[in-house]
Figure (tube, rainbow, N blue to C red):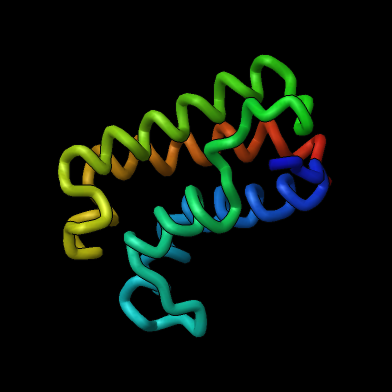
Length: 118
């Protein structure tokens, strides 16, 4: 699969930005926002829609620090998935220590990608 860097960056930054924003997620997951979502949908966005997990694809030509942050983010999501992750009720996910690690990893990865993507 060939990736177009600009499209991947745009989609990835949007997903990471949403994940990094606890208030946005709380509103989306509780139905208080026009953007209705769920923890399971976030996993779908990361792995199936935006293909964030393809951060090391050669077509993207990311710097080593960006790839390391991408790996840390994906690892945090996979780790959270092992303890119930998207199957847990959103009320448990939002402040769960494992999800806090996911949010922090998303923010770090986003911060490293923004100068490239924007």
